[in-house]
Image (cartoon, rainbow, N blue to C red; front, side, top):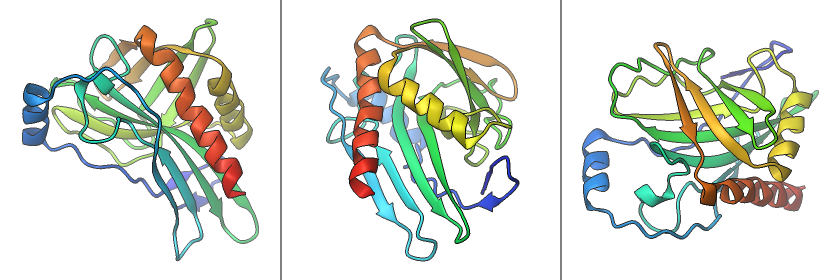
Length: 211
């Protein structure tokens, strides 16, 4: 469930493949890095019961998840951009979010807790955007799969849209992750900065095509 500032409890359909411990270990040992990035859509669907549309970009190139698909230079972070149009009858809400798969192998990180976890994005121009966790609590000792709305915990829909528009035009320099125990600062790879922007460009194009 997603809590917005108007206190409406809205359904959040969090569509992401869970990373399993043994599969991750084998993946990191056996895959050959490929180096090329391509933006595609992982999900573009409408829930039959609620009418909620969910669109999420793919966090890797065609085929298996590859370590070279990581967007940071000091770790393994796999990046997707997402959107939901939630219609409650009397009104509707547009939810913009980032989805991160983070392989960390650090059992001292604790958890990413629903309603408390967050990331802070630092843009190339020095400005920042805080994004609050909106997915279930994740305490996996080697990997997190988490979604973050493009606004702080007490933010507004207008702030989400403003941050989304900035991500269309401004590169990300760093991503700082806050868990229950500590924080991690990830530096975005030079070659991934434009790649991340293309996620949002594809998302924006797909949203407009669905209107």
